[in-house]
Structures are given as structure tokens and as C-alpha cells.
Image (cartoon, rainbow, N blue to C red; front, top):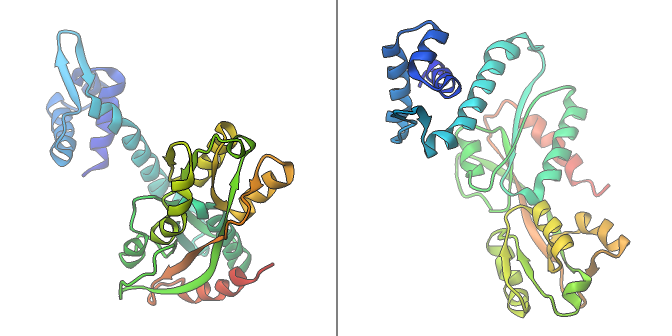
Length: 277
């Protein structure tokens, strides 16, 4: 799909009509219609409705608009800014499956920069993207995941597990026991199943660790959170450890490709990542 199709879509959305967009872009209305049809054929959804009141975005068109804006922004960077960057700087694309490891992903990126110097870094975390497949298909150079990879196209290193502790607010201690379930995979669910059943209130499913922690602090309740995130709130008295609750040790793997240009550097940085300090 051509970048001009996205530019044209945004122009129609901004000007409110195909005629106006054609004038602004200095092309024919037929060209505008053809570019819009490119996107509609690819997505299977109409972008605009035409009526007596003019041209308006459909519901899908409104949802699609920020994505088009983001794609144009990325293209502008890739085609204009990127070629002017220092080409001696290595590029590295890192990802993490679950936001419970967002801070760890940032720490890893900083350690790579300390090891290699300034990088062209791309960091990505996603709750739906298959991180192992993203590494195998060269979308990412390395990724953090909680599921042990079985894909033969990649290799992985086992990292120290993430320690999660069960904490609660004062409201939870007096019976307002909402349990926040982060849905962090099979190992997590096996560990928390009994805890969730003990909760007197509803179970809230939140995939984002930072959102869930904020929810508990504002609403009251309990949940498993990374020890380093909970520590500050435990010290302040906002959270307390739940007595006699064993910690949850969540598996963590760094996935790479043997043929990756960054492979040796990734392995070098692993030793630093494993350092308890």
C-alpha cells in the first residue's frame, strides 16, 4: 500500500471532501478516490460516508485515522531523518511481551548503550504480539518473554525469574478484598488461582502492571506485583505484604536469533543483566 494513500486519506479527513483534497494535493478527484479505495480494499471497511452534509468519516475511519498518522510519522522518520543519522551507530530492536517487564526492558537497553555506545534503539512491548515469532521473522533482534520458546528458528537464554509478592491495601485487610489479576500466563494463573478464590470481591483482569498497581492504590484491594515496584509503597505504608503468602517466581527468557548481527553483543550483555547488583 502506497504512502500517498495514507496522505490522501488524512487530507480528505482534514478538508472534509474529495474535491477539496484533490485541490490541496494538486491531483484529480479520480486519483483521490483510487487511493482511498486502496485502503478500503485492503481493510475491507469503508472510510467515508457521502451525503447532503458532505463527506464524513465512518466509525472505522475515525479509528483508522491515528494509525494513518502514526504510519506517516514513521515513514517521515525512516525516509528523511534516519538517512542523516550516524550510520556507524548499530541499530537494535528490543521487545517484551508483558508490561510487567517494561522497566527491565529499559534497563537492558541502557546496558546495551553502556556496552556498545549510542544506539539507534527501538523498544516495543505488546500484549498480543508473539515476541518469539517477531524475533524469528526479523521484526525484533531480541525480546523478553515468560513462555519458554520452542521455535527452532530462535535461541534463548534463561534469565533470573521475576519475583512477584502478594500485597494489599488497608481496605483489603478489612474486607474490601478486590483481587487484581494480571493474567501473566500459565505459571502465574496456577499460582494465584487459590488466592483469587479467597477474594471476597470481584476479580479484575488487567494486563498492564502499572495500571493495575495504580488501581489497587486508588480503589483498594490486593494483587501480585514485582517486588521492586511494591517496595516503595510497602515502605510508605500504602501496601502491606499478605502474611504467609509465598512469592511468585515468574520465568523470564531472552530470545534471540543465532544469525542476528547483534547476537554476540546480546550474549555479552546477558552477564551484566544477570548481575544481582
